[in-house]
Length: 287
Image (cartoon, rainbow, N blue to C red; front, side, top):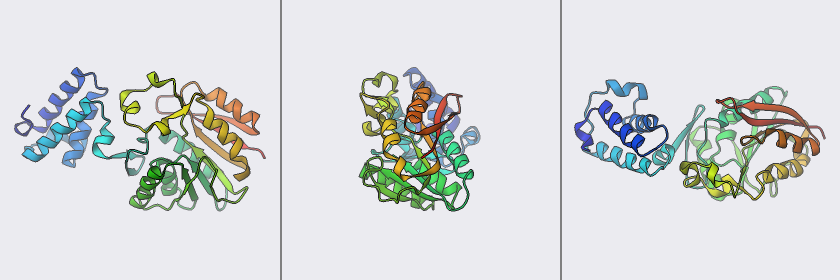
């Protein structure tokens, strides 16, 4: 295909057909997002874009489409992802932020708003920093801390906080082991921990299984391992009445709320994602 002789609309049409024939999910969205980002225009403006692509841009777009044909995610191809009001750069150590996680941030912000005065928020397993940075941006009066066990993830998270003009204090810690915070000081705890068992790889699309870091996806043989650890290890840091917001996988809600209840947390319910699936478990520490 000679991309540099085609209009933007025809480029997208041909790329969409190629991606669809290869079984790539959401082929039109992939083709449109890649071209709109390449040209610096909105997706809705592609049909009206009349200027022919330079040979360099056409070659780059063709290369991007070939990468997408290999099931590399659009965000990995671009090197960044959009999340709420943020543009977050990515590296191989952090998950691509998902739109479903925005509902977790919504729940965390509602929890923040229920508390008065100076608030301390702790994000466990921050990855690219998406949750912590979003909270810091949208509730700048909060003191936001974030942990990860991966140096590489912390590096990109710190970069993203600076890129988006927010202040987040990052710590290398395994859940809270190694975290230097005073006891009974956290008002809101939020986390998107690994929640896929290591024998459940068939649940994952190639875009996730191949391109997201295994340490951020898999919890080992027990898909609930990190929730058990959070419920056991975090209470010393939590204020009485602290809110806890945990991203969860499909069909995990009841079990996780029951686990929390047995550890002294009050189950408050769940928060659905954009598709209506329970995506966050909501609890409160009653220490």
